Image 1 (cartoon, rainbow, N blue to C red):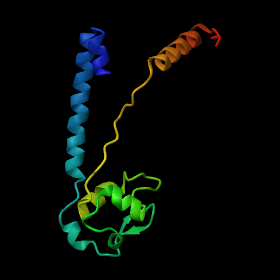
Image 2 (cartoon, one colour; image 1 turned 90 degrees about the horizontal axis):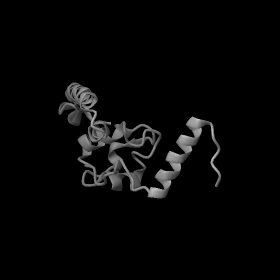
Image 3 (spheres, rainbow, N blue to C red; image 1 turned 45 degrees about the horizontal axis):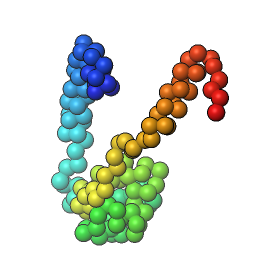
Image 4 (cartoon, one colour; image 1 turned 180 degrees about the horizontal axis):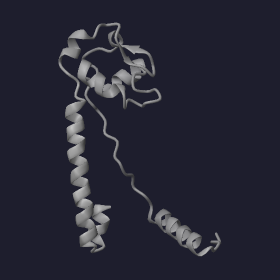
Length: 132
């Protein structure tokens, strides 16, 4: 949104949005500090500690040298309903599984697809029907 507002020349709206982005980032930093896993948790975790509730994976099932991808392939950790959003940080913390893949937030899109979406939106706004 910030990039779009800036590109459109809406400087005041972009400035307000930039301020909101800063506030959200500051809040995220405070939450990261407040909910950071503490070092003493490593000492309290046992081989029977469940590290992935969705797939019922225990800590003993995951080798400390594995990447998160390997842990997923061998144990299904991070493959359940939460998709690793709950257990991923715990696994990284307890077993140093580190993230070994990055999902891009965007994918390439064909220009024809964008054009079709725009035409459909215009037709919808005007109550028209597109042919073809």
